[in-house]
Length: 298
Image (cartoon, rainbow, N blue to C red; front, side, top):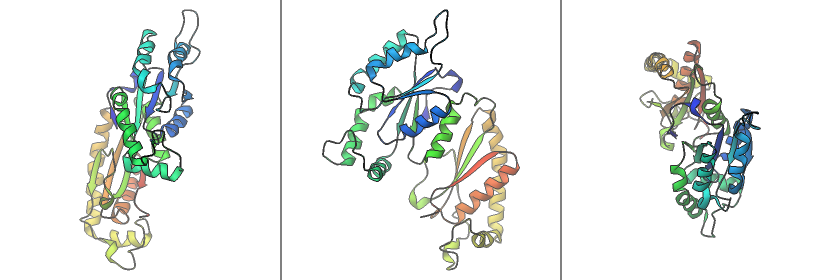
């Protein structure tokens, strides 16, 4: 995730969502609706400046709509040719929309389209991957205009909603830092958009115990196996101590959302147990912490 703007308080009343097909724009729209935004999906581009009038106040009355989100994607036939000129029309009305561009990796987009069985809008009978890459090339200039770029490759519907709420609720100032600890397996690749990453492959591995091999890291027998090892206890204690020092500093700097990755080989045993231990310890300290286990079922 990348952002060009420094403060969410600078956000204008108009947000435009665009990006790659299958990257989560619809899920994001649902989150914006929950935040009280007036949302319009797939609005014809030629109507954007007309719609903008509803967000402009006159001398004698307030705007008809206080805040709105417009979803515009490549299915809109004038999109690529006229997007820039429509933004200029909005600027003449003193409306500068905040543009959010959604994207995901080729592999993830392929999987999503395969699961939904929906045709890709850029498909020219040359295969799904070719269509995905063609759309990515076509939207290069639009992506450059974005104020915020969100990669949804590792997001679920729930974590994406949480991110949208954090960025656009308008109450981030002074709000408690929200921490997400993600367990993962290095063999499946590192999670994206991680702020801090810990590697716990130095710890004893329950995988080599035939009675524990097929159990997840939140099973009491796996926990007991790891808890009896001094280096496990010391690792958890030292990581907790480090985070207790770092988290208030991140919050002081205005960060409202922090993601911590904890990785082992397969993401099923050690990283799960350590992630849960960190979550419990940090919750006792008063931090808002959630735990996510990306690879526990693999």
